[in-house]
Length: 203
Length: 221
Image (cartoon, rainbow over all chains, first blue to last red; front, side, top):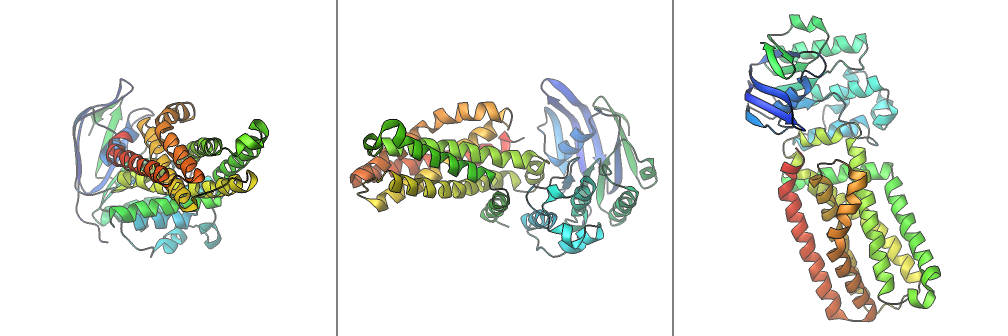
């Protein structure tokens, strides 16, 4: 599966949870390359990513996306009781892909052969996060949405993630990363969106 | 990947997780076994063998087992946002309902098999039409999970522990009546009655299956 040029956009999007607006009149176009979503806690970064992924209902506005995205949330999205290998194989098979490449991807992210077959709840938080991020390699889609992907990662894994993000950018993929830290990503980013209280304050 | 293929993938994933962590099925089997054992003690061995009493208690136990299995399934799915990972996939929302229903029906079939055999052996039930009983039990097992999964998803997964049993049990009453009457008819040798109730169970399974497949994409937003 080769990534293709793609983009996503939000037009005048408002998202409301329990009568509280979490995103307000947000309009953004996402071009291929790396876009950072920055802002303090509660600014609406996660909701923005979930709106792009189509995971939250829009109270107002419209969403357009050129292809199904890979969305990796703040938590690992791995089903307990299953191994990392089984989880990643499930995601690939669901997209109509073979199980090929799962072992190599997990190995590349430092998950040992023994740990690949252990139930994910028996792995450390950092190992689970790395197993989750191996989806960047096993599901190489044109659009990637990563929500606070550096959570739980040590320095080596953080460096690995920066390399993976840079490689995806260089392949022409649209990579959208929400993070309130990691200023070193600024050098890789083609655009930065800053949010405060659900509004875009700088684009 | 077809829609049925995706449903199959979700069901297999669910059953694999259930096999690794069988606490839900163990609790359901234990519950139904204890109920069968207590039944003859509480109502007496003669009444317990009544063709109307044993099926009624059996299906009430299966209704609770359905709720238990469904709640455990969604609890596991929500623990690390695995559910969101699934619905974020193309076709994930549509496959979620079908996959869950199929997997829970398989779990329920195991519980029904154990509970049914225990009822037949321990209560020494006189069974006139075993094949008709099998038809009723199979359709009952298929008819219960769509209702409970519909209720869980219609609640948008909130307040499951308190609301699912309260809201699901009244909706399950028609299925419980049909399954109990159908099983009673099979035990008593009323073939027409057993098949009529089985047909009603089939109709309920279709109705709630269609409801689930059509409301799920909106309900889980």
